[in-house]
Image (cartoon, rainbow, N blue to C red; front, side, top):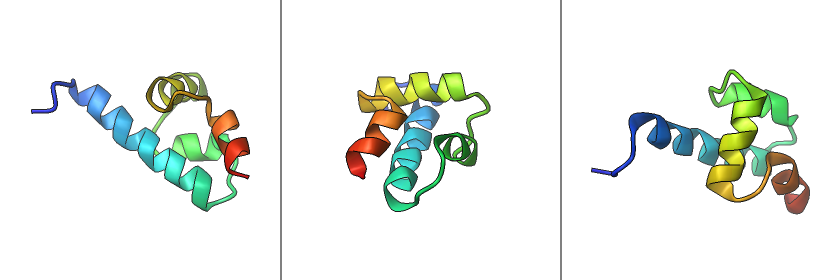
Length: 64
């Protein structure tokens, strides 16, 4: 129904949760990565940039 694979859909949900956590809480990016279910910082950064259009670090700095 979403025209996306399960992995793509799940990654979008995880990244949206990560962006919310980055805004609401002052946690290190590595902690947020593992908190939302990613096992690799590299993969998290790649997916975050793909979905949000920016890196988690840049996103977090722009918020604060």
